[in-house]
Image (cartoon, rainbow, N blue to C red):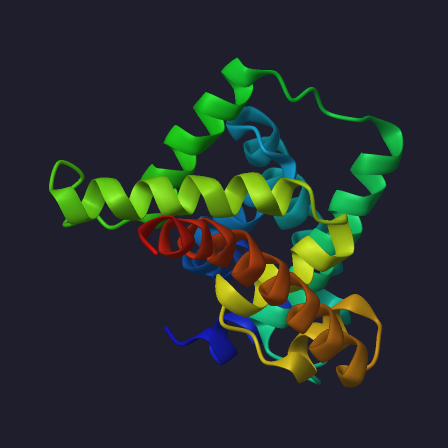
Length: 194
């Protein structure tokens, strides 16, 4: 079955077709939710909420954007609604669990975590995640949609209900912040050698 057929059948009430769509997209939705809520249990809850909302609203999907973009819009709305209701705890134990779950959700099983390069990559990823936690939510969402989901600036703008120019400026700010964070230690090391 292809996605377009599954969407059409799901819109007609075919539960098996929606199950196909669910299986096709749930891992990606979970990975994005995990990066947003910073806790595996909360990410699972948010993922289920997103997919349930998608099931309820599947008849509203018109194909004006990709199904992935439509799901991302539902995720953003669900996340912001949830955020208004409660502010999740960010204890160190929860952050450790999040990082472990993030690694299992994002890294492929073929990644060699014990190699020097694998350890170095995990350390950099944890630094990036720590820095992203300090970025405002909408900026973080845009960054994750672009760099985790591979969405275009146009898709992100549609999902977030903003202009392409705003998305580009926001992404530049976040990337610049990351660049400055990683450039500062390198500059300090270079100054120490001189």
